[in-house]
Length: 211
Image (cartoon, rainbow, N blue to C red; front, side, top):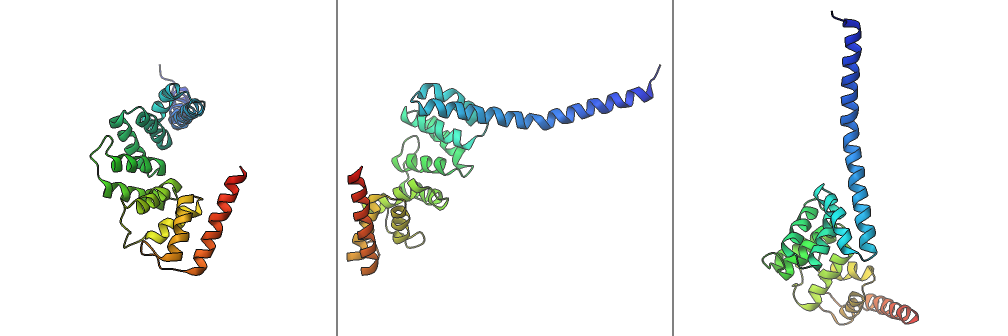
């Protein structure tokens, strides 16, 4: 015996249930991923790197860019270079600045990958363009150490040192003061700017002495 009136509501209910479950699933999955990331970071901040790895790995494998970069950092500390590079690259592929920075550092040093200083600095510029302060500082170090030639395009040496100095990096503040005083790295002397950055250097050092 057929029950056409009763059957249609049942089918409609089943369809609605499936639709709701499909809609909820990504939300639940995302909540799990965020929970794993939070648990991993809590363990990391407490200094328990071993306990941090499992939840961070679950979140990283689910595509969480920050978890990927953090797991890579821990793996890098343990000299698991190939795995660290793989997770940094996963994070960098999502344009996550910490992931790009980590990938750049490993590429410059040749850890877990063939050393390629030029490619590494290109990655640092990419992360710096996303506002990553440590990448600006690393570019400044490259300039001042002589491992990065003063760029002929943007960001040029003046831009790199300025962005780094603006973040409070003392080495760049001192370098800008000297560059504007005497001229170096393609930066023309500028007495006004030299005085400005000399004052900032003095203020920063005075602040450090008070701590």
